[in-house]
Image (cartoon, rainbow, N blue to C red; front, side):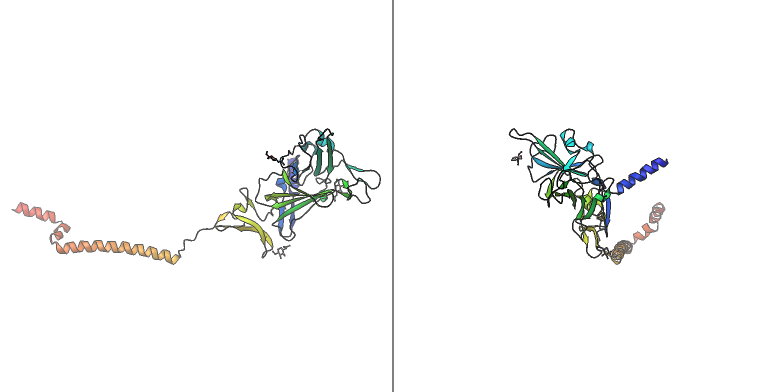
Length: 321
Ligand SMILES: *[C@@H]1O[C@H](CO)[C@@H](O)[C@H](O)[C@H]1NC(C)=O
Ligand SMILES: *[C@@H]1O[C@H](CO)[C@@H](O)[C@H](O)[C@H]1NC(C)=O
Ligand SMILES: *[C@@H]1O[C@H](CO)[C@@H](O)[C@H](O)[C@H]1NC(C)=O
């Protein structure tokens, strides 16, 4: 029982590692983590029709394999050349010799040249990150737009294979490769990361733009699979200095899920007036009915008899004859 409680506590701890708080805004990327899996993104600057399957590349392109708040495990790679190419990766070195890494990594860059026109196929792999599962310090979070948490959050992985700014295999100041995942806040809970824009900003530093509702601060809730219930937009409230849902007309609440109760335009006094009017009409109808009755009594003297049990008196008169 205690073991189970411990396991549950550890599971809760692991799950909470994928959240980050900034002043007045909190982000939770835990839904994007793929346990023992990977995202495979093809740089969409290349052939739009090409496959992302490193096993069956029909073209020459860079493929990025990464996880969110976790490493890419070897079993996430397709069998075959991809893991054997990535198991130990080679980086640049200072002066003589190259450096190698075989540590866990949250991101890999994989290049496959199909070897057209009789050339032999060629595969190359680089680590873009160090171990982030047991060393969260290799993962740094920041806002996509400083001062505006409603735009999204970015996570930077550092500590990949060394790289020289001049592209050579040795230099005096090789820098570790890095990858920045930019999670732009969009009302999109279904976006599958596959063909995205990958940017190299500075030699060996990569950036991937991703549109996802997970990139929104938790102050803009996702209800029924939609940001701000699909009835508003997530933006920054410059008065309260916090991100929040700005609801469309007709909706309210912090997640815009409550319909605004339509005002009938009637005040309590108006309701009383209508009630009094109905009562008055009813009263007048009764009054009219009584007036008709009294008038008929006045015109027809016999009516007095019918009103006071006249028929009996008439009958008596008949028998008297
Ligand atoms: C992609 O495929 C479409 C039709 O399948 C074709 O018309 C187009 O030329 C292809 N684009 C490239 C870049 O190969
Ligand atoms: C980054 O990860 C490496 C192992 O991959 C570890 O040695 C190093 O201490 C980590 N750095 C931080 C800041 O956690
Ligand atoms: C956070 O909110 C408080 C008031 O709610 C405000 O004074 C402060 O400037 C905000 N901080 C940031 C970084 O926006």
